[in-house]
Image (cartoon, rainbow, N blue to C red; front, side):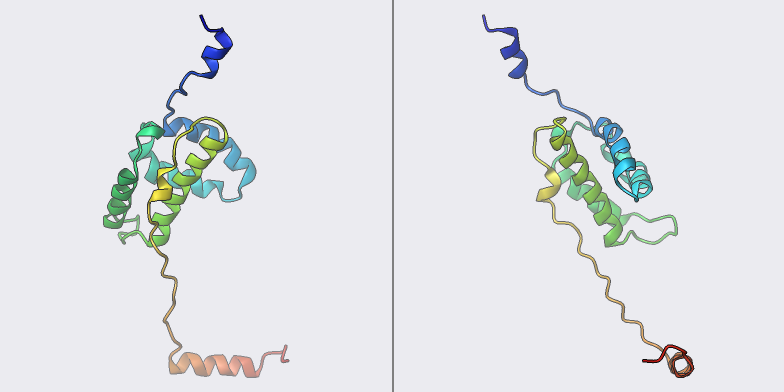
Length: 148
């Protein structure tokens, strides 16, 4: 018969649900990040309905890909499609939850988000000044007090 201590150390970790990781994450988030309100909103609006009751071991890269596709097809509160930046934020938050669950010893498996290609950002602005705006800008710069 093996000692009890040995049996406890060799037991497989019980799988944990994402909602339980979120409960542990929230106090850490509030104490370590200024943007915790964004995480709170993003989790409740996007991640919770899809992943909250799933065990971390059962969420696959395919599930995350389906989530990304559904967000691309979905509409935000203003009736517009979600931007790649918004979708990327959700994947990054989910990935952070996995990483911290591993760090804290709540989960010992892989982070499926690392196998998923995050949407690329397109922040290029191609808007130019029209003639009236350019003239107005030049007048303001001509009269600006801090000239070099």
